Length: 496
Image 1 (tube, one colour):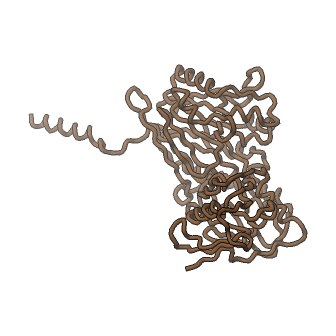
Image 2 (tube, rainbow, N blue to C red; image 1 turned 45 degrees about the vertical axis):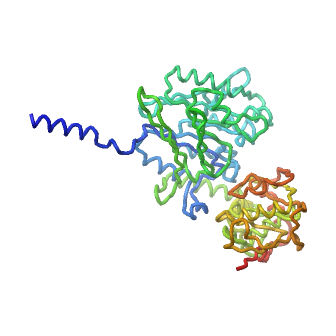
Image 3 (cartoon, rainbow, N blue to C red; image 1 turned 30 degrees about the vertical axis):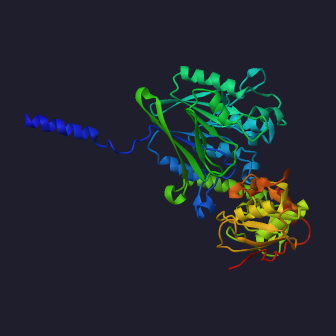
């Protein structure tokens, strides 16, 4: 009897072994979106200049996974770099053959070269594009696309749909023949269909850009359509990943430029129903995951080819101008001067993290310019009160590794002073700042939108986006026979 009792106790202990341990996900969903052509590993300032990101590190990371997973691509994959734009986005098809993507979507940014270019990418993509509300005329699906996808991950059926902003399809040039149906009606129909076919989880890849006039926000989609478990956004182009819950639907944005990958963990309870969702933004450190050698070599060859195509000289510089993230720099002063002069503004302000490489000494090529300023930020005019300008620059001083580069301004400040009270005096073109006076200031649309923490400029009285890219302004600044001379420092003067 004692032996039987001991066996029973032992079985109970074994049965409860691990009861207090962390529950493991049944399925992981990995997501990339807003890659914007930055597909290679690089030192990243916001991660202490550690080498992070890119498709080759992503491949090495995925090779280490033991939990069943799906890999999804949300769109906006090429628009910010010469490597992306010279191929009009086609580079991704070649590189992504090495990665187990299950579904893709395109967003507004991927339509810049029109339907002719994009349709070729859809046709030649190893991974199907899921377009749940977009068809050709007469309701035909474009080649290389599906209206929905039902795929298995581990023991679970995952339903996937993709929604594109109807306003973009209607407004964009060179998209004749494309039609976009109402996203809400399309989503309701696809949810019902996918549930009928056995989908235990339904995911929406969303290109619904809420910043466009009359566009449908993802939040409204979640409120209006029952049965969607996850909405994954793209086309937002913000650095930081985020997640929120609307009713029973999780809204997830995985971040941009592929320095990390979005990891969505799915947990299931009774009757194999989804019971919990957890999200993690996994930084792709090379030191942690290594790098796929074959893919790394393909990336190098592609970048080398791009460099040879971008060797046209656009100007010259007497010396190398170096940037700096944590203070005033010669490169930052030169770029801010170019912005102020082109805009005919009283002052100009740039965030230093947008200047990603030095201006080389001697001949400056188009490729050098893309390396220096790899983003498609547009010049924006502001009409702003002196008090609001002072506040915006004070807030900028609180942003680590993204010091404001200025032109037309002279500022004395206490680097270690109390927050929002570090600027001791400020002049605009030699005259003391007048808080009640209005000034014409040039920034980029990225800064106006609060890019990298510089969100004070939203308090402007008026603003106008010129749609002229900052890189174009720098190229015009380089044009001509005179070589660039390094501007002197001292626009920011630190006081004890």
